[in-house]
Image (tube, helix red, strand yellow):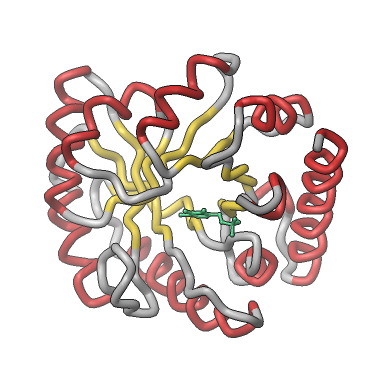
Length: 229
Ligand SMILES: *Cc1c(COP(=O)(O)O)cnc(C)c1O
């Protein structure tokens, strides 16, 4: 397993490089988040020893269990749907919450962040393709959500995130990534206080190369690093 994880990581970085070359970007604009959900701590250590520092998890329990077992410079990202009653537990352990999908959740994060004297970096999740099964702001409601959340002093909105549909051919998701990039640019142009569009979290194992071509600054790769779950 060890060799496989390190080989996979090398391959992903190569693929990021190539996608950046194709789109005239610099590879250091793209942060790889190793999505380690369901995987044992040994696998995270393996990725850590290959130089990876950013890990993505979708369950609060798993973050609470894994975070204390890795060095302090390990960075955890909450990428899954977050329930309001879990905010308090997870806040001290994550650098960024990618999956803020409602003003109500943001309001809870504000309360807790204020309580512990922290400014929390968040991304707003956008359901670009309008899938029934997915969480997130619709593109139509996004601006209103951002304006409300920008009023929360302990929250810093850093960008947008999307989970693109599951598709056979990654090219099918190119329009989804283009749309999120466009929203990102439009919002940035509005110069809203407390909102800076600097992170665009999009692309997973099946489609991250297309996402990078379309401007992703964070990609979330699980299977492509750790193997099937
Ligand atoms: C599981 C997960 C990923 C990684 O998916 P892979 O297809 O295994 O790369 C990325 N983002 C989110 C939000 C996830 O839940």
